[in-house]
Image (cartoon, rainbow, N blue to C red):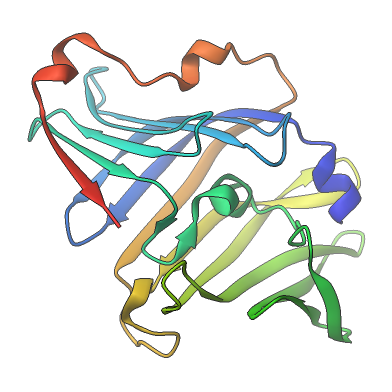
Length: 229
């Protein structure tokens, strides 16, 4: 599954996006683009638009590994540089795509017919697998990460995948539900980030211009700015 995930270098598609954080709450159709040509520096663009084509929110993970969320309605720009409510930015694109990617320095520990664990330093990652018919074939059903941030605070994220789409010799999810628990602690019950993506269209390994992942200027320069930890 990891080898197959590596074959997906770019992705473009359409989805219904719902997101909730302490700062924001949105629900719109969205156009999504991902570039994983350099797995160490993945790029992401999510543009949330209404049925008339007006952009309400724009999220960009750029080549500097900074996430910028532009709220055009409230005229606010939010910037995140490392972790987004417990979700490492470097892993955000693969988690939204439903790809089974092990941490670079991770070592597989406990394993069984329904999944396995991997450890990287003090961080623990759990991968739950599902057998999907017809096939049968393995699909990634759930990912959990328990981590420490740069300040030693416990963080956690949990991603659930369902309604799988057939992709050559493996399955990718149509529905993705991501929850991030931030620095409230690994055992916090209520997530500070909830992000649901219901894919309507997914296209793999098509060219995506690099300017797609550039943060726009112009009018945005007049918006208020907020840096989030």
